[in-house]
Image (cartoon, rainbow, N blue to C red; front, side, top):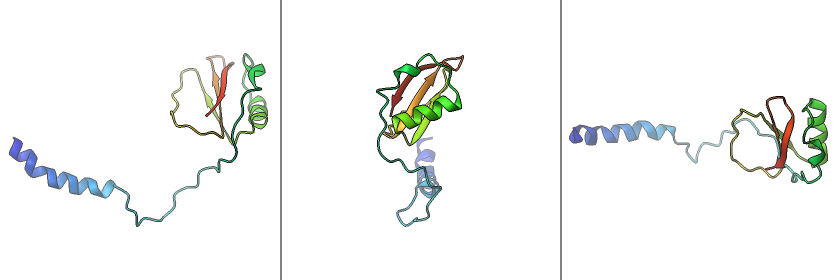
Length: 103
């Protein structure tokens, strides 16, 4: 069994090497939104407890000087990546804002 695995390993590695992007590939993918400046959520505590609407979301984004807003629903999953220009709005099952931060 070990011999069979050892014999198959070079073929598996060769097949997987096509999945690794090369340095020669200069083709650009879709452009992500440009993140400029940084977010400041320190003055947004007044919004906690309010129901999130598109108007409130736009107002909070503007007040925080954020480039991007991420709404995290109560049962949602979010990535742990950090973006200093992003405003995070966490809501409960009734779409009430429970927490606001940047990152």
